[in-house]
Every structure is written in structure tokens, then in C-alpha cells.
Image 1 (cartoon, rainbow, N blue to C red):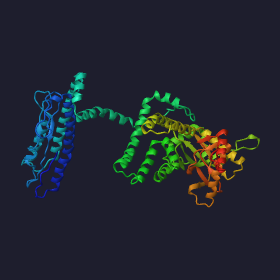
Image 2 (image 1 turned 135 degrees about the vertical axis):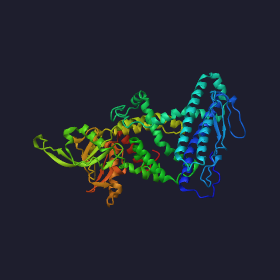
Image 3 (image 1 turned 90 degrees about the vertical axis):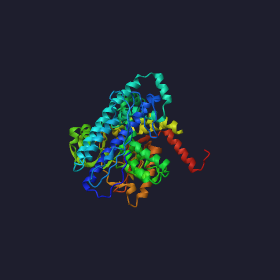
Image 4 (image 1 turned 45 degrees about the vertical axis):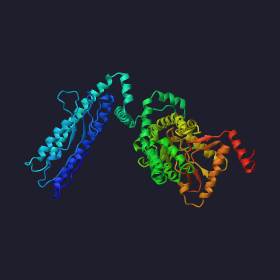
Length: 562
């Protein structure tokens, strides 16, 4: 440990103070590093042959006589005194207590002696009366020499230690293990695990394109068994993503544990943790964003602070680049239909969600005329939803990891919920939402059925089939405002319209819109309710509809026994 004696009362010049400070700054990390390596290597060496360890004096000074040990610095005290002539005191190294041990070579040279020689040379040159001032260059050169000696000796001793350990028998290893102290075992474990930990940490930074082309099943067809077969042949893919998820979430989980078990006050930092969770969800990707969107409207399950933070996921997810959007548009539409799009600013999406993002612009759409001639076009204001690149591969892999981990988590927490079945239900909904052709059909079906039921106060965007594919959905632009942000007087009436529309979908039409978060409910300029995003729907069979109607009838009649 570095100790400083009391400074002289004589004023010290600015230049010499800075030079002395440089000595401290440069030498302190070196001594700390040597001390750490000494502790670890000495513990490992004594583990290899504990009977050769002896304790000298009251301090921890090791004298090991077998070839696998290393020399240690028991203590190093640097006394920096600035006297009238601003020279370092000659006692700078006289109080350094160094311990030698043989490392197999005949000349007995050790790390300690090398450091002593180097620092003694530096001390003599600095304490020379002919030296006009402290030389920072000389100090740096001496420290560099010390560093080279340390590295060279440690490399030699590490190799000898490895040769010794690999040469002993299994019985001898077990006997030494039984006599080893916890500190020695921990040191050995740390040394052995450092390369593995470093390798796993590097794996947690996969390249951006590592999931390109890694779809286990077709878009819209969730199949957990097919996913297991696919990923069982690609273990490195699963390992990389798992380590990435662990690295991203480790800090947030650690903060929660500290708040709960150390500081015992979870509410104090709740707002901060809510923002951290929002950032974490955005980094993880589409799967976590979909879950966050669902939780943002469930203040009965999470606190108000978390619900408020997660509400930003409804339409403010970080967008992907315009270059990727343009590539998807050209690939899906082709050059000819891509030219139909006009005045679309791909650098500024109007909304960005978990699965895709929406752009506003215009399109020249062919129109029907008499005789079936579609050459004439009309310009329409449109909303173009572009699916995120590689979103199927990302969601499929995340669902596989969650599904495989769910039974272990359920066993650890003694949860009564079948988490694997829950993950499968999530998977069916998430993967089905990736098929924009199905979403287009559901949207058109909703408009048609609402008109048939006479519900003219509710609508959905009009789909433009000519500019829609499995990854592109183009609809006419809806001018309006989110229902929860509107200040109009008819908001309460439209909430009733929404409730009526959902009951009709559930009990009559049989196709239920399953994503009714506030970002998908708009009040149009003409006072209608517009429901967006029919990517996630649920088909309700007639048997379930009749059962629900009977339940409602019994509840209304207060016939609870039935």
C-alpha cells in the first residue's frame, strides 16, 4: 500500500507538484495489479502443494519452495518528501520490504528483485544532487521496465504452474482439493473461468445480420415443434440471443433486487425503474414490445408509473432506417407499383410500432371505369405500413427461448400458471400478426359486417389491394385523433360505440379485434370511431358465442346458481 509522509511546509512549485502527482498516478495501478496477481497466483500455487507453504512474521508473506510458486511483494511504501532543494528523499525505497523465492532458475532472480533494482535505479537518479529537476521521462521509462519484467515473469510462472498441475495424478489432485482453503479454491475457479466468461461476453454481441434468413416456419403459421427442430440444429444462434438478452436485462434486474432486498424501498426509484424498463423493452425488440403494449393498459397488473412509461410503446417505438424501408417496398411491390407511391418521406414515419411502421403520402391508384378498363388512376392520400426486416426470425427465436425456459421458471417460482401454454398462445397471436394479407382481409371483413349490422358510427381504414402484400399494407389515410387524446364532446358516446362494436364482434360476427389499446382507436374528423390494426384477431365459434350469451342472460336475471 502506498503511504505518504507528512509534507514539508516549504512551498512546492506547480511543475514539481504535477510531476510528483504523475509518479503516484502511474505507479498506483502497477502496484495494485501486482498485488492482485500475487494473491491469486500464490493461492493457486499453494493449492498445488499446500504442505510447502510457510508463514513468516505477522504479515502475509509467503515462502514457497516448489517450482510452481511466485514471488510476492508483501508491502511497498513510497515516501515522497519535497525538501528545500525539491529532491526526492533517499529513503524512498529503504522501507520497502520485499520477499524472494526461487522459481526454478539458478540465479534466483524474482519479480520482487527486478522491481527493486528498477526502482532503486530510478531513486538514485532522481536523488542525485546534480539533477536540476524531476524527470518525468525517466520515471515513465522505469515504470515501463518494471511492467515488462512483471509480464515476462508471470508468463513463465504461469506456464510452469500449468505444467506442474497437468502432471500430477487425479488422486493427488483430489487430496490437495480436500486440503485447500476457500480462498485458494475461489482463486483457482476465477483463473479457470476468466477465459470462458470473456468468450461468453463476446458472444453476447452478435452481428446485426445474424438472424437474416433464420425463419423456422412460414409467416403466420406458428409451430413450436417445428421451431424446436429448427433451433436444435442451430445451438449457437440460441446461445447468442440468450446471452444478449441476459446482458441487456442484467442491470435492470440487479437494480430491482437492490431496491427490494438492500434498500428495501421499491417505491422510491419506481419512476426511474419504469423509464429503464421502457428502454430495455425497446432494446430487446418486437416480442418484448408486444408484451409491453399489452401491459401498458393493465394498470391492475403493474403500477401506474410502469403503465405510463410503457404507454409510449403504443405508437412511439424506435423506427428502423429509411434504407431498409425502401428495400422492403421495392422488393414487395416491384419497380412498377413502387412508382405509384408519391410524396412519401421515408425518413419520417408518422408512427412506429412493434411489427412495422407507417408512412404518410399519396398514391396513384387504378380506378374502375365502364368496360373494366383500369388504366385511369386517381390520387389518394394513403397510409403505408411497412413490416420490420427480419421480424419473423426475431420473434420466433424469442418465443422459442421463452417457451423452453418457461417450465424451469415455473418450477422455481412454484407458479400455478402453465407458462408454456401461455407462451404458445402469445406465439400464435404474434406470428399471425405478421401476415399483412390476413390483416387486410380482416379489415375489409370488419367494414362489411359493420355495415350489414347497421353500425355506421364505427369504421376501419379502406384497404388498397393493389399496393398491399404480405409485408406491405396500404390503406386510405384516416384524418382524426386518438380517442384518449381528443377533447371533443362526443368522446363518451364513441366509447359506447366501441363497446357495442366489440360485443357485436364477439357474439355475432365471430371475428374479435384483439389489440384495442388507445393507439388503435381514433376519432375521425366527421365524428366516427375508427379501429386500426386488425393483425391480431380471434375467431369465436358459435358454441362459445351461445355459452357467453347464456352467461350474460343469467347474470342479468341474477340467476347465479345456473
